[in-house]
Image 1 (cartoon, rainbow, N blue to C red):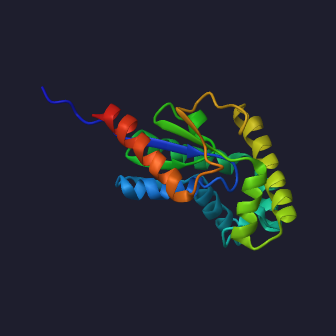
Image 2 (tube, one colour; image 1 turned 135 degrees about the vertical axis):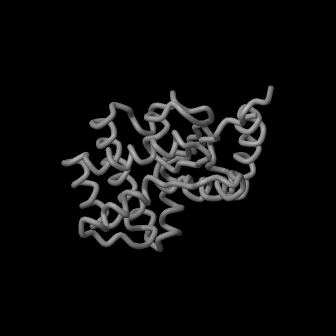
Length: 196
């Protein structure tokens, strides 16, 4: 009797500038899985309603914060994006870069990348060419507003509740390559082994 191989779902989450998008895209490429990003889907939705999302620092910009405020007033967009991501999880063979899927989907291996706020601000400042103080303020506002949206919408506390996660990786002292190596090891030895 042959057993059908289970479809793989990997969810990666973490607060702003923790490296989740980089890790998720590289894992998807390495293991030949589809990649889907909640942030990218929200940017596409923002574009359709008149915003001009561009560049890596858009979420922390004045326009990005206006979009966050709009989402807080009307959760319809967030629900639509999350429904889309849930369908991808049901289909399987996907890496989801999402703040909500670890809580909303019953499927998948769920990873949280933990990086302290000070280090995330340093990374954001380097990425976007802004001062550390500006980066700290931008992160505090973006993460604070996003936490409020999801707590009001779904009842979970982003960055405080680690209960859905199979792995919490403190990546403060790790390079991008080292994070990728650790995650590849975990995927090969836990996720792929369980899917056989």
